[in-house]
Length: 477
Ligand code: 4AD
Image 1 (cartoon, rainbow, N blue to C red):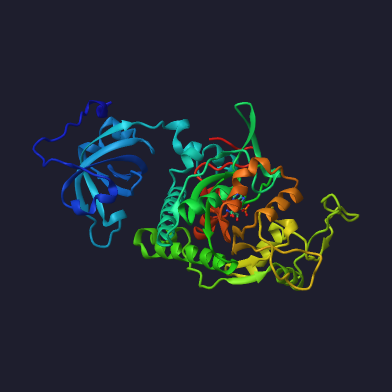
Image 2: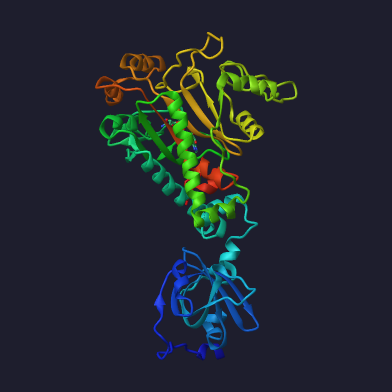
């Protein structure tokens, strides 16, 4: 009751306060400042209130003592309320630490938006013990947390560093459409929708559009959402993900792999030389070390041998692709053969044993998309298979983060490839024209942004690396 009578007013005789974001406070030490943000942490110690304020640019420790800590608003203040705090910024005393090395001694403050207490309090809705489906429903609150927001901040820095690396390699950024009428990576994972009465899809990859840009802009890249209707509940599959794709003209297969390696390593280096982004990586992944170059290159045929030598098996499948079970209902495990897809489990085991980035290259044509260039000299002696100039880059802990290839550059060969795959060439006229009007040897790749981030930030799943992740059954919030 007493507290309700206390009304704070700002002392007009004090120096005028400078409004600032937390990140810009250092030059304002010993000055009067005004900051706004959310109550991140709150502690009351013998009548002195300690608030850790969060404004999105950083954290600031604020101390309220005396009358400013005795108001009704002070006594009922809750976590996640928005406040405006005004006071003098002071270096923290010797031997004490606080974010930024300073703290705010508050002389005037007000609540801008109170958050509920009691049952509906933030910490009641969300805490470390909340189960994953609740965390998914409350993603909009989860992102306020220190870890989740650090991942998102690192993501932003990573995309910006990629753009700088591409600029240094003279690639131009383009923005291809999300709504399309052609498939890239096979009909099975297409999201279909009605486009003014015509069938259309959400894009699986911007690759085909990037290829058409080569004669217009030279080498290009894009950062675009891709959509995959795969029913994969794994820790590295999303239904919508951010796809970093690039396409380069007048290159060969070796140039392509060297380029992928250069872009990734240069981007990681950019993040590590910058003090503030290096700190984000250190916070999330303290033992992170930049990978050394060149990356190991392992042909698909050698990888099959490697898996068998390491007794990494895969479930036997019947002609329809169903797993064959033994009498006890357990999957029968068999050795890999050339022609088999290297599934996620085997790939993950292999990458984790090798422990460094690995390029797997030269996959059989029947496992890969229609547009891939064939290898001139077949790998090994197996004449049953045609191999492609394709590569996947695998990272320890995550597995495949990049898929790329050289493309068919001859229009007759491309038309034959449509036919072989049962694709109607007519909607692809513009893609075929890329070969018709001045073709060139070219290749490119797509990198899963959330997967690379999962590797860099040591996250268990790509779901932590997307702002609002989508997976089968989940499109909220
Ligand atoms: O290997 P993918 O399917 O290749 C393509 O789409 C090519 N057209 C790209 C190109 O050459 N321009 O996908 C490329 C990468 C994968 O290596 C993976 O990192 C990521 O995209 N990716 C996914 N990430 C999250 N969830 C999914 N469902 C993903 N599917 C692919």
